[in-house]
Length: 398
Image 1 (cartoon, rainbow, N blue to C red):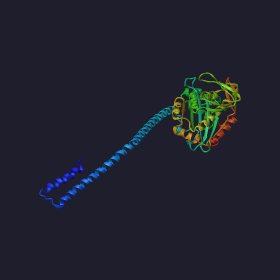
Image 2 (cartoon, one colour; image 1 turned 120 degrees about the vertical axis):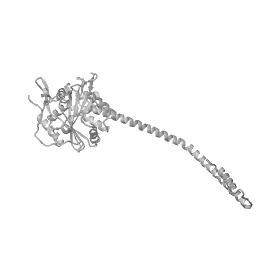
Image 3 (tube, rainbow, N blue to C red; image 1 turned 90 degrees about the horizontal axis):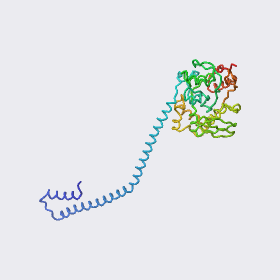
Image 4 (cartoon, helix red, strand yellow; image 1 turned 90 degrees about the vertical axis):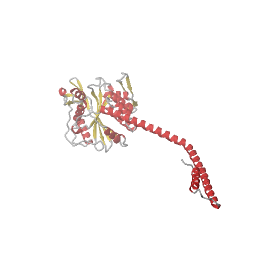
C-alpha cells in the first residue's frame, strides 16, 4: 500500500524532474510551498480523523463482542435442540410406525367395507360402528385365544353421541364359516375357531357379531389383557362408582383385589379384575356387562378430560403385540378430534335382556328375542340403515 506522504514527495520529485530547469522565483515558490504544506495539513487531519474513527470502531467492536458471542451461543444451543427434537421426532415416528404396522390387521373385505354396507363410510360424515374385543390369550400363551369381552360402539359425528352395547360372551348362536366347528356355540368361541381353521380369528368374530345384531361392523380394535392394563395405566387410571362389594383375583400375582361400594380410582390391573369378574354371587345383581359399560364410559371420560389419548412413546409401547386394529393413523386421529375433543360428547348404553340357561350341560346366555330386536333396530336407526325385517344368528332352542 502507498502512504499519503510518499505520494506528496513523489509529486514534488516529479515536478522538479519534469522541469529541471525551472527557476522558482518570487511568490511562485511560496505558492508551491503553500500547496505542499496544505496537502500535509490535510493529510494530518485525515490521519487524525481516521485514527479516531478506527478507535471508535474498535471500541464498539469490543463492546458488542460479548453480545455477539451470546447470540452465537444461543443460536448454537437452539440449533442443537432443534436437531435433538427432530432426531427424536424421527425416532418416535419410526417407533410408532413400526408398532402400528405390527398392530394393523387386514380383514380382506371386498371394497374394505362390511358386506352389510352398500357404500363405504366416512369417519367425519357418517355414523359408524366399531367392535371392541378384549382377548384372553395369556393362558394359551398368545395362541388361539378367545374373545373374553365384546362391545360394539356407534359414533355419530352430527350429534357427537356414542352408544355402547355389550355382547354377552356366552350368547348361544350359530357360528358359520368355521369348518368342522360350524354350528351352535357360545358367541365368543368364534374367535378361537377362526384362529384354528385359518379363517381369521377377528374376521370370524366380527362377522358373527354382525349377524347377531344384524348391523354392519365398520372397524374393530382388539386388545389383550396386557394391552388393557397398559392403556388404563397410560391414562392415569380410571374413576368408577362401584355399586356393590366384591372381590376378584389378580391374574398377574394371584392376589385378591377387594372392591368396595363407592367411588374408586382403579389402576390397570384393578380395572381388569373389575370387568372380568363373573363367578362371584354378586354377579347376579351387578352383572359383568354392566361393569364393562361402566368401565368404558369412565375410560372415554378420562381420555376426554386429559384432551389426549396417549403420548407417542406410550402408543408405541402399547401397540404391536398387545393391540390389533384395522384403523389407520388418519382414522385414529379423526376419532380423537371428532369425539374426545368435543364439548358436546354424550355416552349412552344399550342392554340386551336375557337369562342364563344350561343346555346339554353347557351354560349359555339366551337373549330375549324382543329385547335383541329392539336393540338391533335402535342401532340400525343410529347407523342410518334401511328398514328391514329382523334377523339374527341367535339360537333360543331349549
